[in-house]
Amino acid sequence: MSWWNEQSMSAGEIAAEDGYLWLDSRTNWPVRQIAGTAATEPIELTGSSGRGPFYLLGVPVVVNGVRKLRIDDLRVGSGDPGELLFRATPLYDYANAVASYYTRDGAARFPNDPLDVPALDGAPAMSLLYAPRADGLPIELRCERGASIEQFETQLDALQRLITVAAQQPSTRNLLTVWNGAGTEIEVYRGVTVTPRPAKSVDYRDFPLRLSRANTQTIVDRWWAMMDDLRPIPQIMTALKYQPGYLDSDFFLLATVLDRLSDAWTNLPGLLSAEQYNGMKEAASRLEVPEQFNVDNRPVFHARVVAILETLSDEVWEKVRIDRDSWLASMKRHRNLVAHSSEQRLAHREFMIGPGLRALRAATDVIVTLVVAQHLGIDGDALVFAADRLNVKRIKVHDQYILTFNNNGIGRL
Image (cartoon, rainbow, N blue to C red; front, side, top):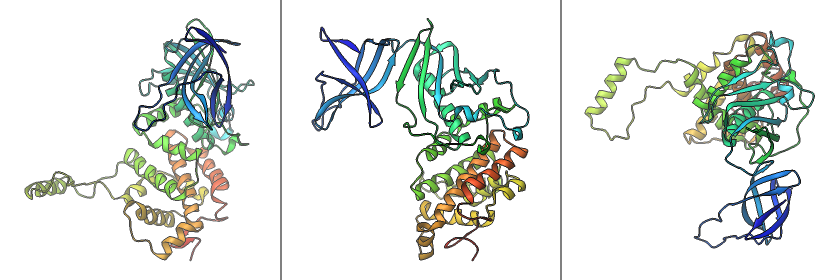
């Protein structure tokens, strides 16, 4: 590619390395490395390439003593970064599989019927065409009145996270093509939610949900509502699919997710009646306590988690094979160790460094998945089957029968 630089023509090539795109050229990019000075300003370039005009936004950095331009935004096919776009076709890992149909899903939707994508975080409502296709590009997002690339990215991020929840694997975006008002095709390379990695072999029957059901529009509506009303809960769920590993933080985040979902989806009364609560607030006001003092009538954590567990049927619990009572006691106990800095005794430490915490994280993640799938509209035989498959994939590696927790780890004492 080539561009004008200070009244002379410069040229370079794009290379991918270390998860980034770089512009390789002889240009002496300005780099500030003096402590206390402002960071180096991003550099915008427009010019021509072997595939048409381009727009590039990058930041000059020094790598191993060499000045390079790290690319944060690259569009090939147009040199106008502010133009309105009308269509986008991304290529996501597992997207075709998630759009597959399985008999336990019940009635199927007509795959060529568009889905309505609600407005989200400043991005307008759009239309989504989503069906398995032989070319591996099952998704097309449209906006009749046009939208910026940032607005398309907002909607695509929500869709990518939904695919991740469905596939139970981090869905990488490998390609994004958009079209402007003139119908010009533009290849877009920008910062992505998930760094590219090899896709795993998956079986669509293992997915807790598939976007081929007759109620797929309900799934879309409710997921977009979660992305809006419950932020950052869906973001946490999908981030943990991308990078699990630190047991303590993963488990604590999953416990927080359950707590927040219970607040949103159950109608648990407070510990005190309205009359008792108002009386307590009045008594506190007469004592002239500091403004920071808070009289809270929320149900305790234990009660909130019980309420969300009870939304799952006995048939689901039978298939997932997690002992509810011991899981609940263990989850509460070890969550409090972090949340309230309780003293850690020898049994606590044995649980947290042995197989107990690893199994507790897996069980909590499975329960979160089933609760969310049910909220999105998966029910009946489909949810029961999802529980059975999650047991096979996630729970049986810890216990072949019913996963039970004790103070020291897993299994009955």
